[in-house]
Image (tube, rainbow, N blue to C red; front, side, top):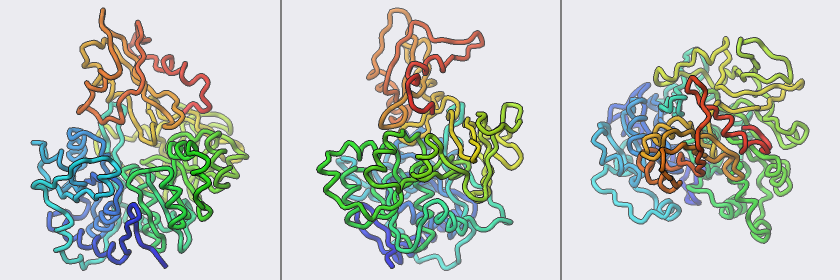
Length: 509
């Protein structure tokens, strides 16, 4: 049975992969990384991500996934907050950290692979005086001690203030090792069976593709295919060439696939594909129906959150019967819909969604701004989303977290963008919000009130924000208002700004 791993078609045999993970554990131990410590990962999609997971399991460490689009300052904030003992990353990405005077932990660089250089049009890739991690791995001995309890990933999400907060799984000695639990989730969520081949091109710094890749890894019988960048025709070619059976695919990718010319769509045999899962942004029904017409009823949609995990699952057949639903709670979990006074609401009544999903374990935030006291109702937790259950127990999402923008699967909080934009000399007042976008789910809109006799263009905002925040957070549309709508208290009426964009939208998420 082939359970090897692939990056852009380049194979790494499973035995060699496991050996490299054990050697990396030895390297990290030599740097003083031990139980309950953390290391940071600054990589584009790479099999090295999964090697790091293996290494961390052997030494009982967490791994912190970092969005590689982030600026050096944003990365340093996360490194400090997480207490990371080292950072591992592609050499062109870590190079920007070597210039930071605030870096005081080891940087282990992986020379950026040639295929990634080509895919991202990176001209030069000088290692400079950085430490090459692969050389350390080649000279290390595999760790001999058995793996410890799995600590897992620390994902960062912005809070309402815009300050990043890390989501850290609590270690409960009375619970089974979560690494073993994930084997059951591989069947419950991904429907994996021996001989299956899982494919992802979504960024592994996102919780969902990272977790699904891990589910595939722990089965020890699944072939894993990682693409460093999504290309719609290459995806079809890979499905045919490797007989891909399972994939993680989000609406943004689906739109790009559907835009391919008919002759390209017909060129490849994709009959091996029998399961595709989507999470994150809303899935428009016209896109879903077009994908089902093309590939068949193979698609599942899941509602989840980095804090809680995969909460629901709905099949293609169910989604036709329950249009707009994100499915039922996974087995072993429960959902409560509560009003503002924590009263349970009846079927069809919208309120805060509270979920108890014990198989993923409890969590804590990394800083005080991540306090979750107000998010708990007994063993149930909310991430602030609004929705309702129908009489059959199917969940419908009415609204996402207040103000949060979900663009291309990334969670973006406007406060951080607003705090940077207000420093522009032309701007008197500003507000940032999300508007519907056919490919990315939502686009970022900046509404501004200018100082007297001032003018402003979107390109000027981009130039000003460059190096302050990551470019995926840049506004893509600019609205200039004579006066922004604010309450007497100073709170802005963002709903008034959003309403014209969402008036005809299919889903208000």
